[in-house]
Image 1 (cartoon, rainbow, N blue to C red):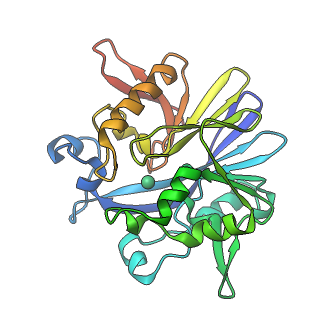
Image 2 (cartoon, helix red, strand yellow):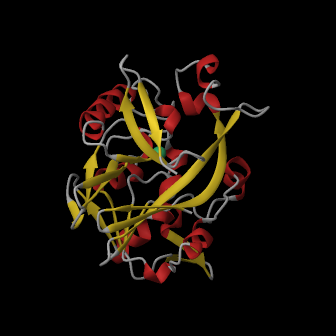
Length: 279
Ligand SMILES: [Zn+2]
């Protein structure tokens, strides 16, 4: 279990499991001769990709940031993405029942980030976390209703539309505090409205940076994913993030890293970025 203390808060990384993506897609324009020094591909050129959610126990609320891939994929999608569906058992191992979650925050609405928002029960869609208030960026939800042909496959409306309709999901305008110490900030690039979640307590900061920096192998400014809709904005958003996160020593949480779930991005003497891991 990956657990740490941040001021008065307890942070636990909860995995929904690992899946496999094409290494070329995962590293965009970066040549394989370079990325294969950091990550090993299998015989189909696929690399292992984690699905890390973050549970924050503030003492007053239990906040779950992101809900993985979930359990509702179609047969075809299961063949492609395997659907590990481990989140609930890993939450249980961390001593948390779905009923114990007070708040769920989605950084964006791609299916591998909000899949456990809902479950299918007796043929009907129900909230996985019945007591929780859910939050997601409004711009994401608007876009998800009419996505481009390029990323339409990434949206499954059952993950959010029933929650918006019932009033259980609140749509966020961006850069706002959700509970004391937990706020969201828009970092465009991967999508136009993706929001990182910033957690502050006792003078320390952690950031769930989501698909802006999906793994520790993507910390360089130009190592973006091919899936990014606005790759030049990814670079500008990374610069804006590092301008605060490096000098203020923010703990960066990596959504899709199967091994290095979090760490501190540092600048070396030659200006090269590196990661100081924590266990
Ligand atoms: Zn995404």
